[in-house]
Image 1: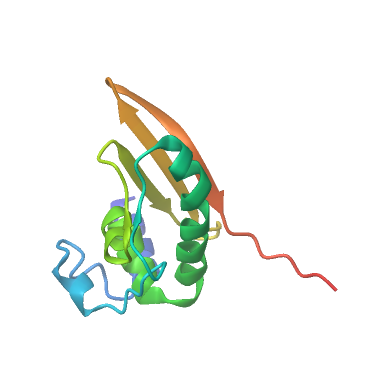
Image 2 (image 1 turned 180 degrees about the horizontal axis):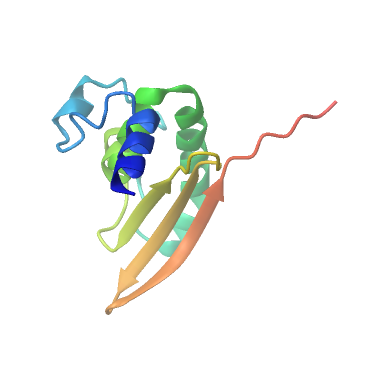
Length: 129
């Protein structure tokens, strides 16, 4: 069972997961900014209003940039910070990409030993005429 999981992870991450144990390799990545100015989100209202656009950009980039996908999968909050987006300490971000599923980002708020989901985003492409 573990060998199958390991094989799937290696197939999903061509680098075999090497270098994912620290943030140092992120310095080598081309992690462009999400906005010309820093975005400092302090309230739930700001998070609900501004974060979906930023996370939409991140999700779109995971589809076309394997290095960004690996970095965002392992360190979503740190990637956002390096892109100029700062979240309060009580906010966490989880990125999931299953083998045949669409990438998904979930934002949680943790306060007073309680955790609640604030946002969940999936990128879905739609063709229009």
